[in-house]
Image (cartoon, rainbow, N blue to C red):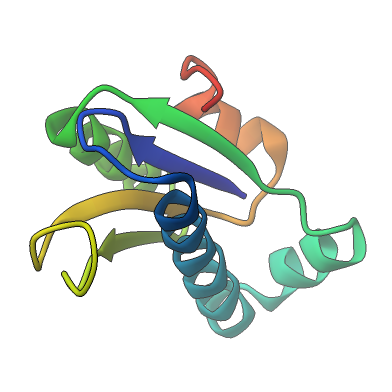
Length: 113
């Protein structure tokens, strides 16, 4: 599983962790329903999660479109606006779980967070 985070918004470490967790949980639930075989493999292998970055919202949407075109599960995270961000701010995108080779075709060029 990959979580893609926007670098153009200011997030405290705690807020970043919460947003990444939302993406991971959403993707896990979606995968369990839509692709239980990939979910089970990911779960049994230790639930790998990698956090990478994009420069802004347009780049995040490009990654989302590429992931969906590749048949990967995605979850776009929108903040409720209760703490640091205005309501509706898109913060990150979860992708997967899926094999490294499938995800790397979409996100392999992105730098680690």
